[in-house]
Image 1 (spheres, rainbow, N blue to C red):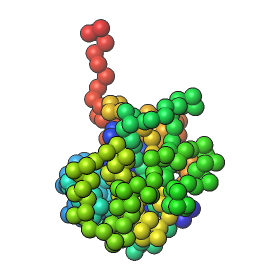
Image 2: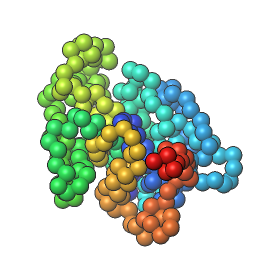
Image 3: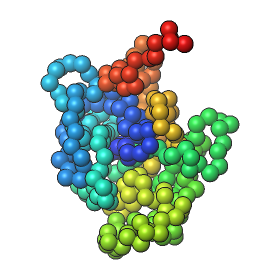
Length: 268
């Protein structure tokens, strides 16, 4: 599947970011550049993936290439400035279209307390949203056992507003009515993944959002689940990975201090 761009949409638990960390480290993707976007809050840190060579800094919005997988991966480490999500998504969509990307995969998480129909009989469930069909369905995703996000409804006022805004048929000022009268049905289209979906779609790009429900806390298991789903969807071969201690995934170096040391068991 050539010309794919994979990126997270920041949300609860940062599961999308953690999943992208796994994809970058496990495919041994090379950093090819970074984005200087005024809508992203600044941040800086040590290299997230390797302890050497020293001196490489992690920046808010970086691009990585895995040539063997024909995959470009964008990692976002800091949030978008308040009220600028759609503008940021438009800028990223412009870049994706200009650089010849054909398929965009967005990874994100959803708030567990919003899950209406909980079914854990088959483990953690992956939901998806696709631009293939007008109702958001995709036969390939269905074959993988995933469910289309039921809250997607292009006729619903905020989903429709997002679509119109991305296509240049609405103004950002028009969203004030949603802020004043926001209902339950306005929650999902207010999330970052929805803005990205609408803006990439408006550019004529194929876009697939892979989503999972989670709660705040230790979200490492959720990130493995979402990364596995993305890997399966993208057709990434496990043979191309050299996981830590014989596992399938390479654990990023920065994860050593992700949640701090374990508790002192002598306290219990």
